[in-house]
Image 1 (cartoon, rainbow, N blue to C red):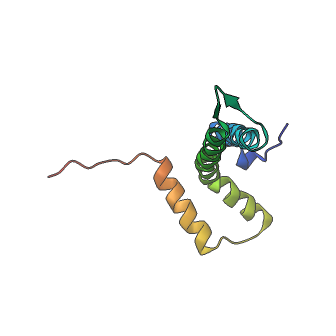
Image 2: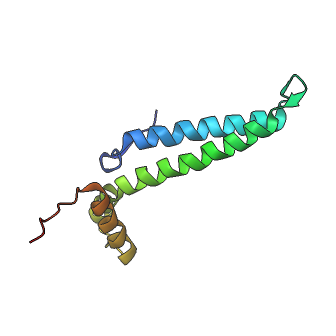
Image 3: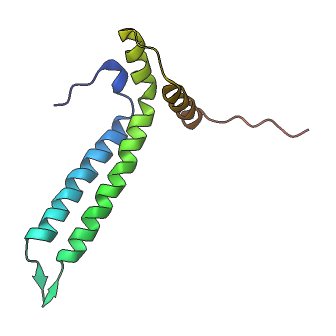
Length: 109
């Protein structure tokens, strides 16, 4: 079991998606490389290698979503430790807020 800090437990669905895609992708990659999978004279190892690589690529989207959803928690943890945020931290927080908060449109005059 993975133990999370209180500030790092946001976006659990993105985390589960990323871990599942990583596990499936690495499994497919290893099967495609090391197992001889021939059906009716056709080799399906390449298919597993390519699909495994794509699944690992998709998992990166899950990791980015999970990390960006936890930027606020990381910032709070840093402030509790007494460290000041850098310009990169402020930029990441601003982008995270814009992604998470719905935009309100003002009606045209």
